[in-house]
Length: 216
Image (cartoon, rainbow, N blue to C red; front, side):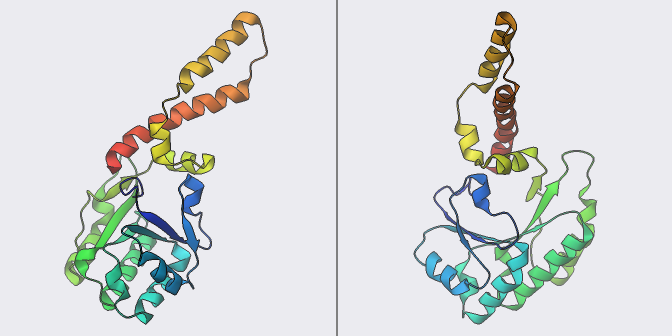
């Protein structure tokens, strides 16, 4: 989402999970008990993204309850869910709670997350979709799906952002090949670690380019 809203200030409400700064993105980190601080901060922002970790969802919702009309300060609520039944049940519970405290159904967007690129059927979400249609006015759309991609883990491990990797024009492949060729022709010991670093960056970009295209 940060890629689609580059000017937005990112706030991470996290305790246990890995925050977005591990992806090389500037982020303001808070805990679930700092809801008033969060509200003070977003009041002066034209655009903001609030990333609420699973361990802090109940604290965030509690804040929405305690601060009058605070739920109206957020344009959309993106609720991720995976094919696991437990995750779908938790997503449905979160959505029901948001509706109870006055969030407009049109502002709630279930995001189908970690979807395998092949051999997958959205029928695995049939119960969730049926429940949303029967008991709520929340729209579900399988176009709001995020496929599994090794780029996410690779970006986190190297503390890089998606946008920065795609924008990087350095020819890592040629550099790696040059090191290997020099080692072979001159009989030098190969710097395998350097070669791996360079080839890994090239591979990472190969993952990131199509991912960015899908997200934008």
